[in-house]
Length: 236
Image (spheres, rainbow, N blue to C red):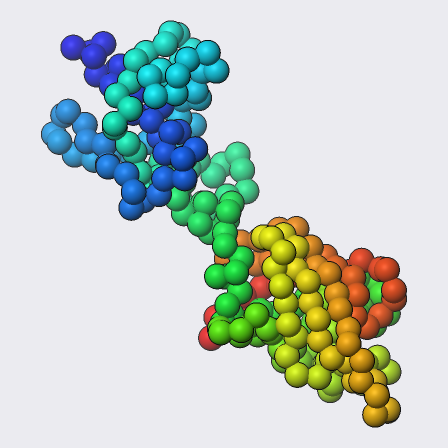
């Protein structure tokens, strides 16, 4: 009897990996129930078994001892795969939360309608030690610089007492993927009537739903110089 229960538990751990690889989430799977007391249980992420390269995924999973056949129709919700945070930088409690909030967030959805405090990390004279704030539109692919400076994009607000040009109206952005953002806007030259189109490229190097690290060049400032901006979400 003990051997049968052990085999079932090992099979459940293996199937949790199958859900992860196939993109399964909390709403798509069938929660596994133990044969004892008929109650749901959770699975530690470190106990997920890795697929053997020599057998079919739908039939066997490899363990340290031997190959044990499993029922490929049994599924474990990613919400029930518990994460041990001790040896990593994750803060999520379960696998589904980690995917949605930290590992594979949808940056488009995160930015829409959000406001971010900007702290600039650079030795460039125009941005050293400066801060700012930006707000993304909830309907358009645009954002506004509310005040201060946004070094990664080369943006300086009109109210800042510097000689650099400033953006007129909203800044348009295009996400080429989850890591690269292309910006365009109209710049006003301080003290002159002339305006000109401007652009910048930003690389998103670290992200979760509440903080984003951006590195970019373009806009006002030294040509070709990379600048860092650290964004922290402002909940209003």
